[in-house]
Length: 74
Image 1 (cartoon, rainbow, N blue to C red):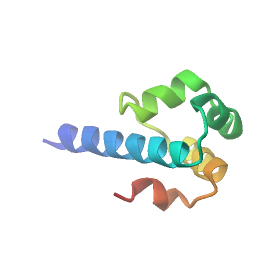
Image 2: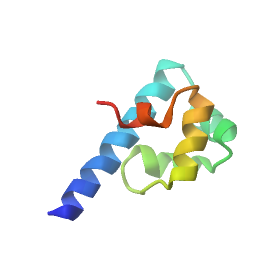
Image 3: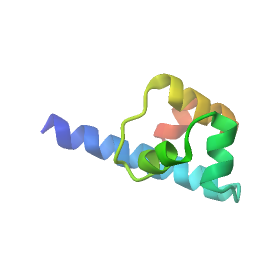
């Protein structure tokens, strides 16, 4: 059961990152460049196929101009 919950969180955070990125009309490549991560890594995060570490979440949040907590909002 814990795994399903972790999967749900990954998908929710990934969707939130995608929503925030699209609200800015940014491509995945642009956000990845600003966050200093690979575009493929960002793609897997947005799809919920990869877990993000705190440092990566902080980079993404900073690039988007939001607090890390914003990435966990529904």
